[in-house]
Image 1 (cartoon, rainbow, N blue to C red):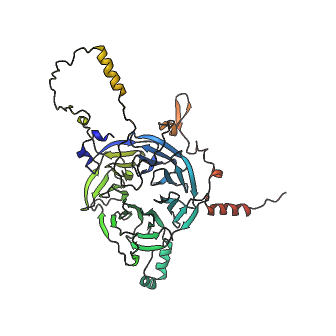
Image 2: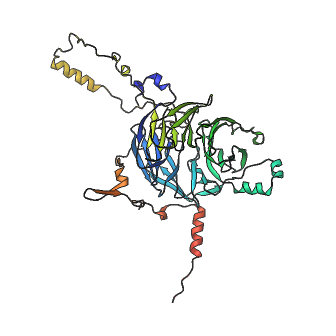
Length: 476
């Protein structure tokens, strides 16, 4: 985008209006913008992670390391590392400098979501299916897993009055979503019984619990400041909260009381929300709905619905807002395409040519007196040489204002020129002259050599125990 050609009044708008394009590389199931917004990671149904360049809308890199659908994606702060969690029960940390796998961590159950630590890309928190959430430290060759609490923290009075049935219900709760605060000192966790837990990321101690709803908490998102939280639950209500400064040493969690700021819901059609996200500045909340092809946008100041984005004819699942532009991306459930909404930006060519005039109707052109005069060859040659001596700057990039904590340009992903640009290379193979068929689900995955991948400590112990307790076959 050439900023000098864009109308400044258009740049002042903070909400997308119309659908402006779409991205396609396989069937997408999860997307996530990088912190600078120049890259978009897309996890596919076949386990491949595709990174799109948002300037050209082209494929910048393809990462192959999963065998099942990608469940969630998380970027490091400097946008060099990407964490992907798949339905094959493992998480992979990628280095986008060369596309290599830094670490691979396996679990004993399916993964709901995995989020990287904002301060240390070698640490992440994961919510597991019917299992305790964990904080994983990948600093060593063999990752270390630390179990996080799930049962809500109750007051002394509540614990004294609690019955055995209530204690058993608390013990059976499972965490469905985890997310780090921007300071990386705390973890917000949501449970299947509607509890919001605040956990100390260093001591793994449960500091505070708040009952938001009686239903399952599906997703938690925070603004870049860490003070605003949006929470999506299965009771068809989206809630926003205002958090205090959790890093304040004077904060007493025993006296903390969270209150719901806004509740967003459809009282008429009783729509169920698939996914929610904040805008770049946190002024808007966007959500996609079940069995609906619209994106709903609410303004948080008054809590009113301000816009419904249309343009697709399929249900939308994951929705993401650009880090600092009025730009929204959402996944179509049926086609797997990534649909893009933005603002139509008419270009001001008068910024480059001050004498450029835009006309709304045909105007008779009156040429200048010397416009068509034949110039001497010597003068034309001299003018051409003078223009060739001018230095044209093609390397300087217009920096956009961003709220991220890292310096822009700290890491820039190298360009690969051998990326397959066509979807047919991934999904369709030739079987004869003019005959094609879809690639088998397991084909082309010979790169998966589990023996060369470091595993977690508990898995290595389990494999060693299995090898020593094997049965012996009696010789006949």
